[in-house]
Amino acid sequence: MSTAVLTKIRIREGVWEGMLSGPETVPALMVTHLEAPVEGMSVTKDGDAWRVSVPIPSHAISDGVQTFLIKEAASGETLASFALAAGEPLSEDLRAEVDLLRAELDLLKRAFRRHCVETGA
Image 1 (cartoon, rainbow, N blue to C red):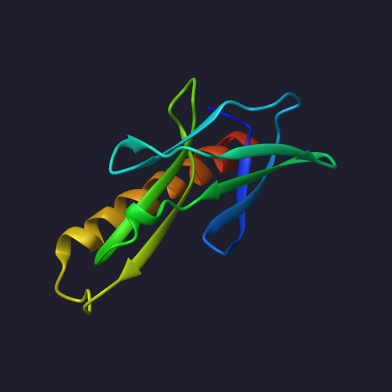
Image 2: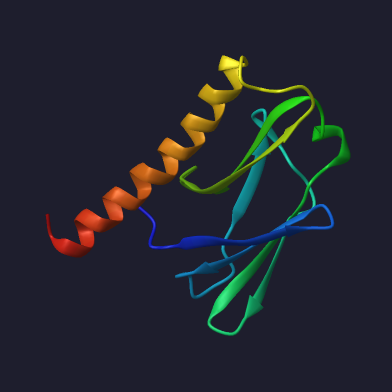
């Protein structure tokens, strides 16, 4: 389990931005959308942390919920996720809800494991 913590800052002008704390050296990260890699991510040093920028490809913006996962390349552990919702109301789209729940569950599992390590539980 990683000690890296990736925190969302914002989505602005089609770019997701976050801060990664923990690693001393440049972390190897990857971004996926529909299990395919997303190109163009940048990781730059910003004080004691790393600024992570993920350009959202225009082809990924479409009706429904589009979920992106940011993972450690070596372990495949999900550090963060974000979703875009567009188009018709999604209240009846069960697949979109399941997709969001899976991404959120990955984040919750990671936070719970980190809590257990920190508290010795």
